[in-house]
Amino acid sequence: MVTAGNADHMYYLVAGAWADFSPLTIFHTDGSFVQTARIIIGFNQRLLLLNTVEQSADGTTIQQFVNRCRYSFAGSPFAVNAWLEPNNTNGGESWGGGGFVDATTAEAIIGVEFIKNHLIVFFESSTWEIVDTGNPNDPFLWQRLNVELGSESTFSTVAFDKVALATGGTGIHACNGSNVERIDNKIPDKIFGINDSSTGVARIWGIRDYFTEMVYWCMPVNSQPSNQPYPSSVLIYNYKNNSWALNDDCITAFGYFQQQLALQLQFWDIELQESHWELGGGDVAGNVRQVIAGNQQGFVYLVQSDVSVNCSARQITNIVITAGGNGATFTVIDHMLGVGNYISLIGIVGITNMNGNIYSVVTTPTANTFTIQNTNLPLTLWTGVYQGGGTLAFTSNIQVVSKQWNPYVTQDRNIFLSKIDFSVKSTESGQVTVDYLVGSGEQLQINQARQSGTLIGTGVLETFPYPSVPSETGQDRLWHPVYFQGDAQCIQIVINMTDVQIRNPDISEEDIQIEAMTLYTMPTSSRLT
Image (cartoon, rainbow, N blue to C red):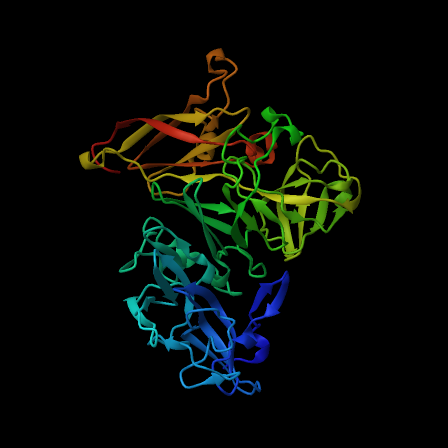
């Protein structure tokens, strides 16, 4: 049982204004109507309301039917008899073909998606199809497709031509109209890291990017602070090569945007060579479907695959300088930051020496405040009083962990790794650090080698042309080595940026692309040790 205050009415747009649709859904002679529904969707000339909240005319009875599909007759859903059940009248009009059908389950309807002309309905822990019977007096029936895989997030469904994807309590599922199965077997535990508090699963939103051939799901994770409920990560699925990745950024909704006109060079006030646009590319053409994202503060921006930094889309309400100009307390509503996160700052008016720099978050006293320290070198004190205009962007660190490699395991031999040649896209000043683990241990070896005096390299992989190799200048792709000294039953590499690297915008804002690797190895001991 629900109350009137817990369910908003449904509205529709007419003549540029919103009108209340709920009173038009009268389905009984006594004036009972549908107050609201989780999902509204059109199907075979009828309007369907799924997971409904229904109210008597006098408001004394309000009840939710979580497994219900209520449908209009085949025609305008605004007609006075569009929603009437059999043997009922409204405004002098009798039944015209409306009604409802309940699924034989106590689970709630969560999401829907089309596969061609099949309407797939995801319940909490099962998947069904609404089947069109072709009988105008009894037009729909429920058909169960799977009894254990469903969806927990209404907006997580993503449509493909042959399947529909959705996130459920046990994994990310694909339904082809007759069968449902998990597709996230490469990351089987990731779905269990979703933060269920503060309606976390309801905050998941999915979308398909046709340009990059990927699917994005924004989701809250268990590692984020409990007082910050919004999604802090974006799960990425490359459906062309069946690979997965996780990005750190706060996005609460996705959508599509099609600009009506292409950008015209005569109105372009930036030199083409200084922009991110490609002449004649899909990003500047008119009517290209682009993915847009929005966050908890109301910022809306394009998701562009060729931009290597996050959007500066969190407004800074206030900054108070502390500790003699070396510290500062920021007020940013629902900042969604954790201790150790990195942020870049732009647009700050009134305070000197802050803009264009990257800082690490030191503390997060509340969901709306955090502190930073001025540790960038050369050290320049912050001065002035904040006057507004500032925004911040989350600065993401690369975190790539390989499998545990040993090509000699069938020979019962250890592996010695001496060098890896990396094929990288050429940049102006980019670099990352390539560290490694030996055996099944968790100690990164560069620091261990430095302490023991056996370090034979820094582990830094530069993605810019070596000044001492003139032939690399002008090349789009470079081959650069990183040296190791690992001997174990297996070797695992870890690629990321150090604190010094990520604080330098010239390094951390570069587009790092690793296209290939060549490992130089040899077998060592005669048994795995």
